[in-house]
Each structure stands twice: as structure tokens, then as C-alpha cells.
Length: 166
Image (tube, rainbow, N blue to C red; front, side, top):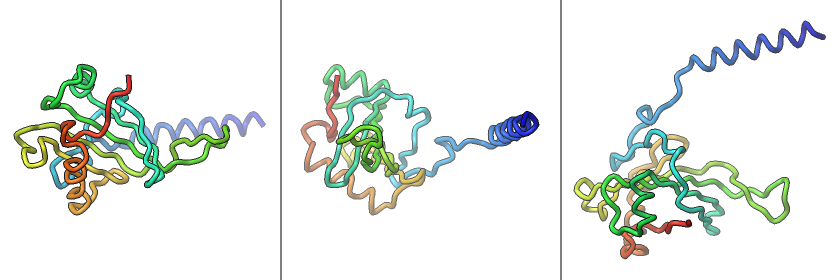
């Protein structure tokens, strides 16, 4: 029995060395969205702006902000300054196996980014939009729906739906 355990440990160690040698995908490895927006390095380490839920899409979402965005949100500064980036992570809602009447993140749906650069994105309210599904940019047609929705619904909030949840 000890021999089998030692063999399993050795195989796991070898697999760990093998997989650690494989290059991890980085933000630079991912193609840019049609707008030029890419997945920012380290975005999963950003602070939470707020959670949200969309019943029509059966999704749970978390909106994150980089330091520039978080500073503006806390100060209630509009418009957002150039360099602010917001990230939206979306998952299908899944019923919790551990707690009745509770939903948890299920299958990942996409990640989306809004990048503030007033000059570069002057035609879309100063924001560049990037939508990525399974690490790949969504189509130009999908991206064409972003700004019109923001323009109709949240023009008076610098085109940003999310409010800071302190």
C-alpha cells in the first residue's frame, strides 16, 4: 500500500512540474476586441464595485474596478477620468447544493470591459467596450450593441450602469 501511495505522490509531483512548465495565457495572448480593448493584466485582483443580477439572462454578475475607477466611484466623480477601467464577470445562476433558495455562480458566460479614454473613444462617450467569451473577443456585431444600450439607459451617469456599493 505504501508503494502505491509513493507512486501516486511521484506521479502528482511530475504532473505538477509538467503543467507548471506550460506557459499560462496572459492578457497579451488574447486577441483584442474589434474596439481595440484587450483583457487587462491582473483584472481579477481589482476591487469589487458591486454585484448585480439579470433575471432576463439568468445571470449573476460582479463588477470590478481598477484603482482609477475605484477612486472616482468613491468620490462620486463624473465623468470618470481617463484610465478608469470597469470589468464585468458574468455567470449563469446555479442553485446552491448547500443552501436552499440560494444561487451561486455557475457556468462562466463572458467578461466585459469598459475602458475610459475620452480621445480614443470619443464616438462612444469616451468609453471603449470589450466583450470576451471563453477568452476570445466577441464579434463586431455583438460589440455594436454595447454603446447604444448604455447611451439610451445611462447617458447621465457617464454611460455606466453600475453604482458603487460601499
